[in-house]
Length: 124
Image (cartoon, rainbow, N blue to C red; front, top):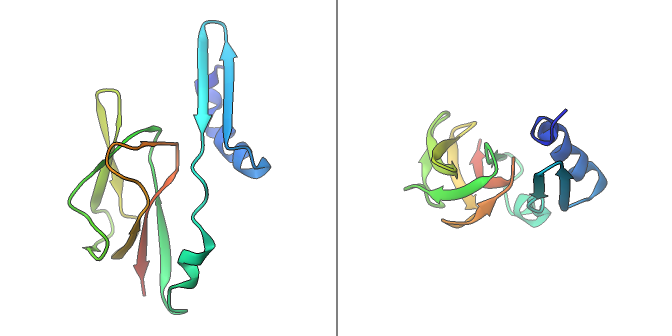
């Protein structure tokens, strides 16, 4: 099994064991993973009890590219919120639920990790 084939298992295992940075080498390939910290609890405490929050993860490791969505923007399920660039490919960051964008957790040009939280959407 190659390093890239192990990626889907590595990120969850790192979170489970509290590891935020990992470098692995195999033959002439080197894989470095850095996970973003989990969404802080105080964000959840600022919301009313009837409001649900949906964390929108990065679809892949890459460079975050902000679109027109800002805190306070209303979005529908399936809307494209931003993009993550992986080399020449731009992967869309899709809203998993409709609601209002509460928080944007990355800035344009940030390097983001696989499934790093990028947005928090509030819905009722």
